[in-house]
Amino acid sequence: MNTLSSSTASTPDPVNFLRYLNGLSEQNNKAMESEDFEVRHAAKDVELAIQNTRVAREADLDKLIEEIDDISKKTLEGFGNIIQSNDKEAISKIGSDVGLYIDSLTYGARPKLNMAQKNIVAGSLGSDVSFIFDGVFPVSAKEGYGYEPTLTIGEKVYKVRENDNTATDTTIQFKLKAEEIIIEGSKQITVKLDLPWENGSILYDTRVATYNFSYDVLPTSPGKITAVYREKAVTIQNSESSVTAPWYAPKRVVELFKGEKVRPNRREELPQLNWGAVQSLQGLPGEELRKMVIETPDGEIIKLKGENSKHPYARVVTDEQGNHTLEITKA
Image (cartoon, rainbow, N blue to C red; front, side):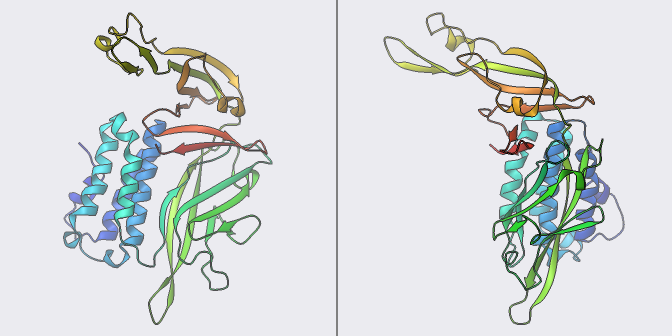
């Protein structure tokens, strides 16, 4: 089985930690181009882990890989193995494991990026596209010291103090017009976030932590939607006790409920809705939305999990201005 580390493990040349991490990124990039929506976004979580490792362990980047402790190596390679395994349940949980790993690193004065919200609006002219980054940014909010974060898209550089862009110690947001950054027909946008930080305790110098991301671009309309509903958990009284029957209750338990049965999933095709309508989908009384399968006009399949799912899910959020955003949320 190929893993994220296979290209570096077989080379006879001396490999330092930076080259090793770059090799992981190169192989992970293949997964980020996957046609499978969940695999693609799990790979983006893994890339965030790799990039945080570069920042947090800057002092170790020139060391030979044999000198690096096994914790980072085993963890990052483990993430790669999960993606390669095609285990959907494990892939769906990878985001929370990445979060724990990122928190385990030691950053000192360096910035820590917990999450780059993987949102992008439908590419309609006049709408705003928000790039929101959550983490710990010790000096990003300071003005006049040269610590201003910047976002680069193509050849254009956006500064955080311009327009409605904002920076605090925990959140950085860039709000841009869709027509500035979205090329008609494009499916992804690549951006670079530069975070200057303050190095030293007596004599200070400014260094820059760099993060690179790709964002999916939604089509202007969802296309064909199949909504999958399930019956909500119900509580049935009997002479001995009150028992809750979840949707996944095995048959032998359901039979104890005086003949009551949990209905199977109900599928409903909902063609040609707009993104705003997707947000408000509801089932029949007593049902909850389990997932939506969206086939976009260009044939891409996007799976949006219901909010009550145990796994990470995606949803479409529409703001007061009518901008539609695909939001990936961790359970």
